[in-house]
Image (cartoon, rainbow, N blue to C red; front, side, top):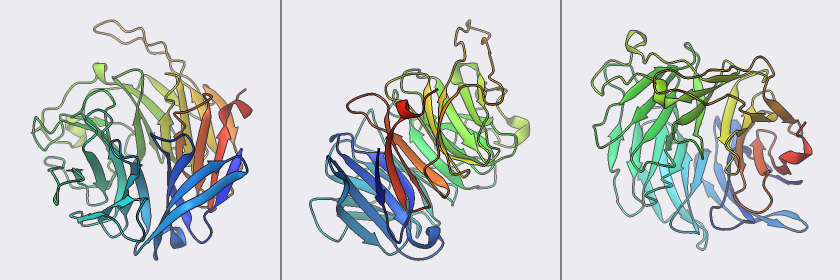
Length: 350
């Protein structure tokens, strides 16, 4: 395992480079993101540990970052002042592009893994915006229909469909979007019974599987084949919600689950980061042997599916990611304790 201290800055997000096996990006904020500057770290993994290859300071805190899928040296950041910045790590000091259309904190950034020339952001203003790094303005803006705007904590492109986006919000909805259809959701699932949903991730091997995590301390797994679609013009209020139940629920965290990430190597492994100061590894043992009309649901009970616990952090753990490279099982986590840890899940599996 390896560690790096982001001295004076509390971590919010960490991501492995999709091009280099020894490079990470970390988005961090001073004063826990409440007030003050932000810093984007570019970290290198060396035989002697983790070193800061470069960093960029910003006028407001950073809440997320995403590596470009088409340019190995570029990273987009989500900023507390509502701006989005694109940095080139071969240059110094300033971003190569900056946009400011969101009216509140930008909380997530996600690059399109299929089409690769676009990325999306979500904000506390309730909006999702689609961008191209070569355009001066956003390509499209997505927002719920006939529902009060709520904080959209995360939005993510499907790794199988270039135009399909999933989002999660403080109003407890998991929403699906397709800009080809319109700027409203094509499906809305009332996923966590009123609790805020903080994170989501698409399964890398099963195109219809999404996991969500919430302040209710649970992780829920959804099979989109067994949800009723609410049309793009329908209300997103609870009475019009999609008639859906999760195919699995994972219990074990003691506080809100801030971030989740499916493994790029195994279809059933999931990594989570929580305010209980732990990161955990889960195995989704649900039997996905559904018929065309009825899913076969085998729920796990409290603690079921838990494979391991990482407890080296001493504050909220808010970011996590899997390495695409080398031996399967290497991950990174970041927390408010100003620490980035790179570790092997095989050290904690049981």
